[in-house]
Image (cartoon, rainbow, N blue to C red; front, side, top):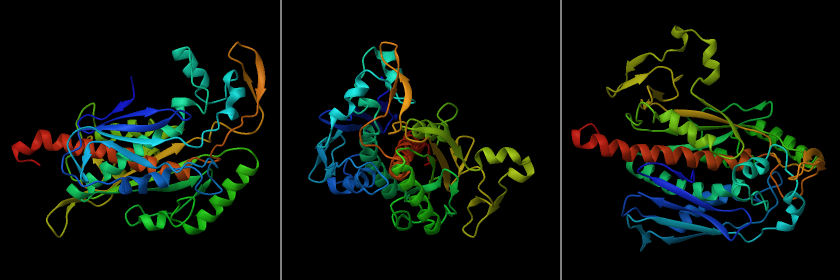
Length: 365
């Protein structure tokens, strides 16, 4: 019921924020891929809470356990189960929210749909659910890197009105991880950190934009017409908590150009490959990758749960106020970076396997 994503490389996430744990089942992973808990842990450590003064103070080590699908360090081709146990849930912080709906949160809508909701930490609507996505994304990244040399790098492009200057063609992971806000523009990063810290002290929240680039993507990935590559990427990142907008290539700015200004003209490079002089298409044309870098942007709203008093209603329909307790990110952007990377990796891995399955026997692989 909406908890499974993908076709050939398919994941199902499970668990709640304040339950026993969260995790993922991965089906369709090719056999004999070398993978370890340590490799997955590297990605989870980028996502976990309590990283710095500008993230939630909840302390979770987020140690992953591979329960099945890996034997002697290699995938077996059977379903891979990964579990991360919750160890620092503080459910008493949410007692008041058992009856009061948090503004702009999923409380009221979950109640409207199911007639029951897990009010402890938001339950299934919590961003803690993304642990399973990031764990699965670590495996997808390795498949993409090993088979096709694909490299996926996300970073914070903008916080509120502070916009960084980053070249997606040359940015490195080391530059992204050089500061706690994950913005490769060092000067802008300092301003972002100061702004987020001020918002945190004010018991408020703030939003922004994550940009992500996938380099060395093979040509031909994508399944028109309903499973166009950018359509599946859009769905994947828009399923992340707090996401509110998606762009690829020129995005909305492209509407200000004429066709002659926007079109990516072709040329033949030194190796005889067909390339484009510009990349306003964002690496995808007609729903199929063209071999150029895929560049996307995802807008994230300010965190819904804040410490300021706001007007709300109770489950029984009485007007009241609420100053939410609990431990929450004043800005989701720094921790959203590995989440966006993971979702892009899952889509590209799935489409790589689909392309191989459909086209390899005909020689167009």
